[in-house]
Length: 286
Length: 320
Image (tube, rainbow over all chains, first blue to last red; front, side):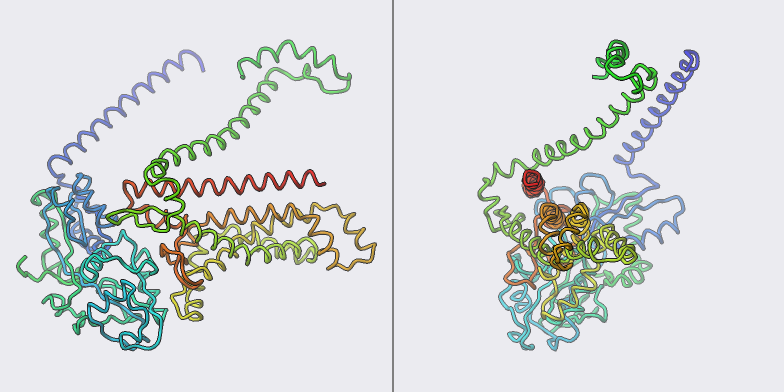
């Protein structure tokens, strides 16, 4: 390379570097603004994988109705979602569990967006069709090990548990076991679909999944004599039920507020929420 | 190194080397400077290649060690390696990995017990029994087995094998039995390929001598060839063992992940590798450090395997 061309190249490189630096600082500035006052074109929604189907569908409908707005949805788990909204890396954090005491001081505002009930599922070939909540707890704690102890056939109970990152497990543990430890010999599967699949195939299996994901391959048990039907869940007689939450840092404002209102509108509640297998809030008092 | 070598090599040694060789031999003096530089550059390139591998091992070991070390200090080495309770999220967290170590060993040894005879049999078939035409079909099939991603083995195990085991055992189908079968198939190509190499490297004169003494094919294989290839086959088995103990994705899908030593081969279990996959997404603080501690243990186990191969190979070298 001749010295002249080398000089020219160096000058070009310098220009490019300067340009790059300018663009970077512009990006950084944009980033700052997004952190301070909410962006008007981009909304980040992160959290519970349970809520992800609702968030995804709502995102598509909202983007269609509001051209130019981008909603980014990520299913990273409830804990990660709460962390992301608290740290400002998302505007809305979604969670399928209540805030832990340690998370209460983060200044997060909770807006429930749907009911989610957890169904206790067994293999369709299992003649048992209902258990008391205490029996369910005893099974998952490992104190009842055979179906004949709860009126079923002489068949070993195969417990299918979720992994500890699961919001469903956290809710189930809190509502049913009262925080007591699960049977440590139980199988631990990372996903609702896997739990349902395994229960559908093993005669002695028992597991738990959100009511929205129950299908014909498994049988949902009644608990304390109450079937996990929509009516029983919205009127709160079905005992294993929880709320799904949208969390914002402080009162929702700007785009986050509009998106929340959209999710709570009948357009989403009566279609998306129902189709995802959850139950709408139904204007009940918070 | 380059800086010091270059000038010296381009001047003085030329004459020396040219003098020491016969007139017909190509000498360094006939090599142009540019060729010499090219050669030197290539030499350094290969040096860099080798260095990258060594540096990667060192860096990974240092990183894992740095992140995992505090857990040994916190819980004590004996409690970490000898504890049966893995309760990382309890109020009084406990980080004992003995159950996981034992489960890893049971899964590995069981898979090996099923897979190694199968693999050595395959190797004998390919090297001694099969006609070239049959070999042309069987060998690519075995090689293909090695190329299947482990997650595909896992899917196969979860969706196809586990339901059958569940039917047969009356349980959920997760457990050592399922993992053994999956691992056996996974390590088969590794062991088969290296064992076949070992068998093929036996000079054909040895086979001929055996046949000349009236030995049958079976006697030749059993009494002559397998003992002769013993060292290579043991190396192959240890390599297969390394693959089995480190296997993660396939095992996580068929193991069921219960953090206890199960009381049967049809009961769920958790291993050293799968605990990292299952726990890492939500682990924080000491829990995360403990997972790095598990990684250190895995690292040491594979180092032990490599060392074992080296020692055995050396013994073999002295023997022959």
